Image (cartoon, rainbow over all chains, first blue to last red):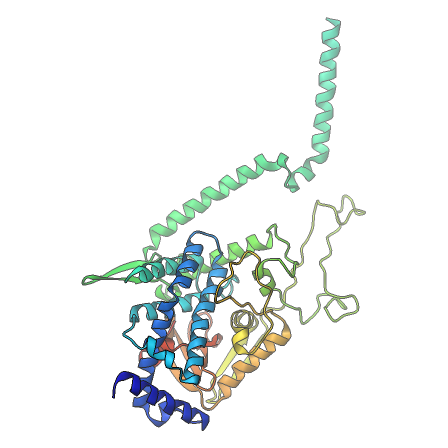
Amino acid sequence: MNDQQNFFKLLKYSNELKINNKYLDKEDPEAFDTLLKFLVRIEDNLHYSEKQEYTELAKDFLADQITADDFSYSFLAIYEGIGEKLGQMKIKESLELVNFLKSSRPELGKLLARIYGSCDSFSPDPDITMADEQELKDCAQILLVELQKE
Amino acid sequence: MKFNKSRGRKRKLFASALLILRILFNGMQSSSTSSNSTNFQDGVNSKTEISRVLEKELFRHQEGSAQPEQVMKGSQTALKIPYGGDDDSSQPSKFSARSKAKDAARKDFARWQTGKKPISGRSGGSPFAEAFTVEPKFPARPGGNGDGLFGRFTSRPTPDPRNPECAGGPRSITVLLNQRNSDESTKLTAYDGFEAKLTDKSENHLTSKYGHKFGVDDPLPRNPNQKPTKYEQTRTRLNNENKAKVREEIKSILSNTNSDIYSDVSIRGIQSQVYHCKDTNRLVGIHTEGEFAGQIMKAQPISERQLELLRELNILD
């Protein structure tokens, strides 16, 4: 069984379990880990497919065309938007998922998750903020470098 | 000679008149932002600028770790983002990343509060101002709240002792901030008995950032300066109703017996407990150490990558 067949088999199984209020990680932890690996790969590739959005956002922020607050909200919007897209594709068991099953860019995925954390922690309220503007600028700079890698 | 004498007298008179006028209007000049005060302002600004530069230099000198690090790994270059959790938390320092963040945010906050943009502008104003406008639960004056007879609370200028008739004059105005008690918090208990506090500040932060992900459909109007993009940012309006909805969703994650519990999770280097609801794919993160110990600091959807990092490495950034 190749990757594609295996992936769709596991995805279908997981969706069926959910309908019956059961969870793959409880029923078959090993299968869940395999499915998660596939999904992470797909998600990383989906993010990379939207590199233009991330690049423009980072450039605008580094050029001071948008505020740190705007950067944080916009980054979360792109990241979560892609997550939602993947969620819909999972429910529909969309065949389009195959296009993103190829080998991924794990470094980009990890970096994006890290930047998500920085954006989440940023607040204009000094009593609650855990990230400052400089941290977000560093994130934008590093993101640009990572996205420029082929 | 006679002509010169009268000319000199006229000059003296003119100079005296000017002096009197200057003394009379000095207060107004110094409090206004007219061109006459530009020189004074320039002086102040240059002093502030110098102290900022010095502060920046000193900071750079003392905290090299706050800059992005480049770590060489064989032929690869890995870039590391420094964050609040990276500094030595056992040694609280005013140069720590977190202190720096707080300081910068405090400056921004102060700048915003004294800024030129109207704070009260509901539409067309700064999205931040709109996102952080909170409705007072308890009126500062009887009848002064939004539901009261006299409408929303408005700040009243302090009367000028030198000119009591002119209370609204430009000499002295006390701005009373329309803020809710920041100590207010809600205690929530998870299904395993773990107790957490949801503070008002945290609730504002989470509602504004993730309200739309927690079933609240009340976004603030789009900032007119914002570029149209495929994935538009959403800031949920802060009001009691929206905050209550988010609070309920957080409660349901904590009380859902199907939620997975992750203990000893590192959230940006801070020990935390995380509850992941598999039905909704959302999580709640509670700090178990540090400044915000016992407080709910995260309530967000989770991506596949974040879930993998959480399961395998007990990390949530």
